[in-house]
Image (cartoon, rainbow over all chains, first blue to last red; front, top):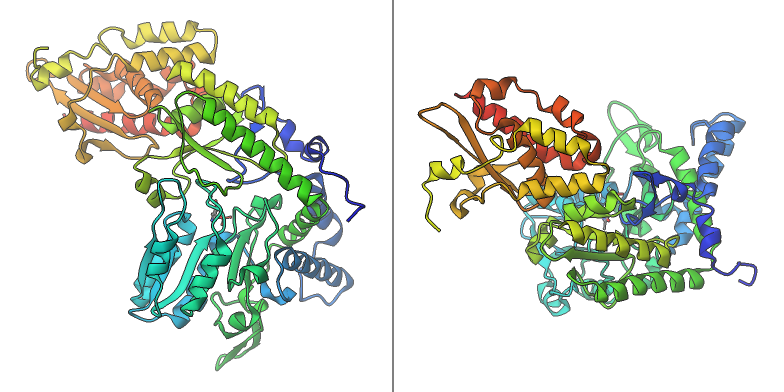
Length: 409
Length: 152
Ligand SMILES: Cc1ncc(COP(=O)(O)O)c(C=O)c1O
């Protein structure tokens, strides 16, 4: 589109008020975007406008205000649906986030379909959110959990994955982008392999949606789960995208208002998806705020954005290669948004603390991927994670900060 | 190096004897900025005699902190004083533990129970400078020392 202005990182930064705050009296350098991203003015305004001008309960309105709130709410569903390439809006189920989306699939689809002796395949790279719900499901059903190994470079072993696949495998779940290492998994190919043995595929998109366009049709998966707060939207808001036929066959998970068709004490019938899975009053402002975040993303020069993000990440990796004592954890050639590392044998938490004192926000620890850290035999890493508003100057600040850290440890 | 018997190992720990908490407090409070305070705390950690490898076992692990922390103790049968040794894979945590040792090592159990750590840590400017996530190890260690003291 020719009317989209070329990507200008300074103009983008100006839209994120939080980037101007200080931390420990230093200008904040925010490199913890894997944990959550900051919010642009348009999202803040949408949240504010909602409570000032639109607040009322959705889908139950007998009045104009409720109708308008419902329209805004459903318009957001359309935006999010289009953002990931859903075939129809009704394939988007609102949840509290990636975590709840995975739990929904495990509890509704999983419990309905799995039986003893079946298998679930996940990967070593997974966030606890994409491990624990499957473990609980295995305990409940007698199914078995199998794990795709990862190489020293942080790349999944595709041959080992292929070897794990057989007709007992009912569900395959893996991340699009690893939150701990930044590895981008070959999701199209991995999905095709799983489909070849008839498995249903869930992809954890928590770390991908802020960095590149997702097209669930092109991937060919069955479920795609993601969170608003990792793509410049509000916290506590997320979605499950699922193929409509699958959603339709799934029983409800949580019961309550909104998800029913008819209720009597003898028999209750359930609403159609997505409403069947949206019991209770939803996070209406969160939904509307997320719609604004999608609008923000869609207004960008995507190619320019990707080129900028690649430039910043490549710049960081080049600096890392020159930084004495720095050891990268995860060296996938295909990566997004994340640089995980250790400094000599310093504890990552010490590095993080001393960076924090300098106003540089990174995350340290296991990043909710303890099995992955065990695989590498380390207590955790220091993770700098980037978003579209980060710059080479942020990277410079990080490495100046690291030089100072080294004088302490 | 002459091998120390386990109890000599504890007696070789200078923290709490010299520097005492009072002296350390004065030194830390006089430092002008966070950098020097952190450097001093980290350097203090190096004064803790190393823990015997055999003591680095799960039974001696302190839970509740991001870093790994081991703690062992010893009561001198003659003086009745309570001694502690500890170690951590985090240099900052080890330094903070050393600060606590200045306050509590080589003390009577009753004194360990009565001496309050928080006002002292505030006074010397440490509380303000420790990220809340990092202070966990400190409070866990404090709880451990008080619990041990209450048994004697
Ligand atoms: C890969 C991945 N999966 C799942 C989650 C959980 O997301 P949420 O906390 O928004 O449910 C995260 C967030 O850290 C993540 O990075």
